[in-house]
Length: 286
Image 1 (cartoon, rainbow, N blue to C red):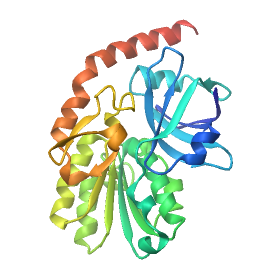
Image 2 (spheres, helix red, strand yellow):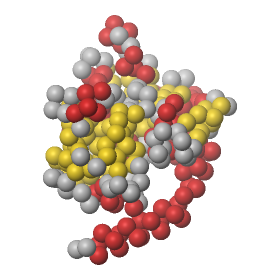
Image 3 (cartoon, rainbow, N blue to C red):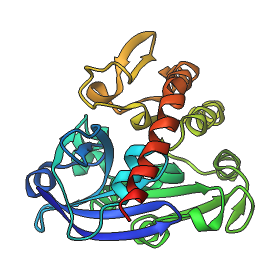
Image 4 (tube, rainbow, N blue to C red):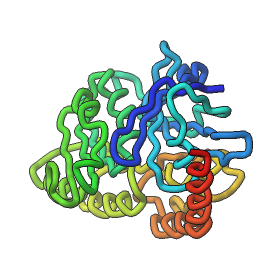
């Protein structure tokens, strides 16, 4: 069993949990994910690792309530325990294979959309610990949905917050802020974008005229996390790849985003029905 040591609501329907999982924490790297189940018959749920502490044996995950499985996760409280918590899985971020000397002098830009801010944080933190400069753009619909602002400020050089409605920071999309920064003369060795598929598609289109090397994380495609279900199939560079075992990070310019977005919408009807049933089941025990 894997007990929940901390539960904190970061925003409406967005929850952070610290889970005691020493073996996972000791091996985790930025860019990787875990799979958990809420009960013996529950769905295998892949979640990107938000942070990890090998000394304390803690892995931090962030979940947004969007369906039945995430609703069930958020029903757990401090002191409860997940029966299954497996990982780390997936291929770590490319830069962990670079030596400190190879990273020296490089500058990164991270673009995080919504919940994508959570998996961006461990990457920026890792680079900060090695004195690598990084700027971060966070995009959210409203001020209430901005997460990890203070944590990100502590590990990046410049933090730009964008809200769709202008309730906080820059009013506009992350692509608008990207263009503004680049037109003001910024130079980056690598850009990483993590967030909704449609956001990553338009970041890719916006970055291309500037010849920016760009990596995206296709973690939102994953279902079973082993490649066996095939739900995370995506075309990258004209070849079929599996996001959970060959990713989740890929060269953005090689990804067929339109195909990936179609695949994401395949199970919406079943997800809506399952979420409705989960809501009734959880509240029937109150």
